[in-house]
Length: 117
Length: 111
Image 1 (cartoon, rainbow over the protein chains, first blue to last red):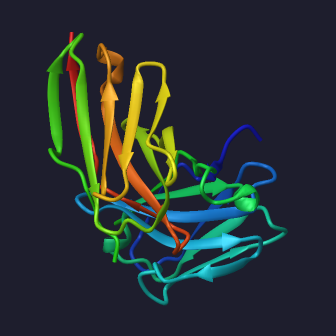
Image 2: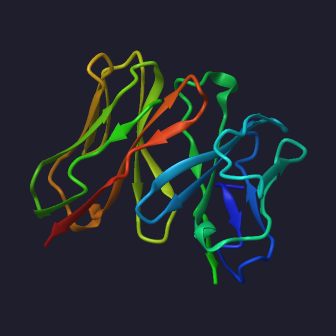
């Protein structure tokens, strides 16, 4: 595709339910990143994939959060037993670091706006 | 731990003014610095990327500079227009393979 695609664009769910967020990176981009943007908190890093492996999961807030990537392409971020503090915009980005990290920008999707009632 | 600061949090200027947005970061061990634009309800659009070995980058009316040793970057917007109204985010990409963001500057350009 032309850009990073995320779905759904909006998700409203009840506290305690599980949610799954999807990211389709730019074709050929080997690196994929998940970030969370909360009111007053700014953008925070969650997890990074290089291919299908996740060298850095340090940003995941709790063990209720998990992510996977298959085929070096689509990634899903799963939040189990959602809490109200999980309400935020979840952004996905991809880049092509094969040509070096220093000159490859990250391209962002429009995000999934998650609201926990 | 890398920290990125953008001050002020908001800025309002009349159309046509040249303006400078500031960004500072604490750890100079970075691969690059990126400036992004975010419109309400949208994702981030990459405006400029400056590699750690570079001093500045230009795109149209935008010019970004980087002084890695002092931990500072500026985004210069020439002849501002109402369509420039948005939130501008500065982010540094480090050896930890992730972007660390400032909280952004919300710019309003008055017609």
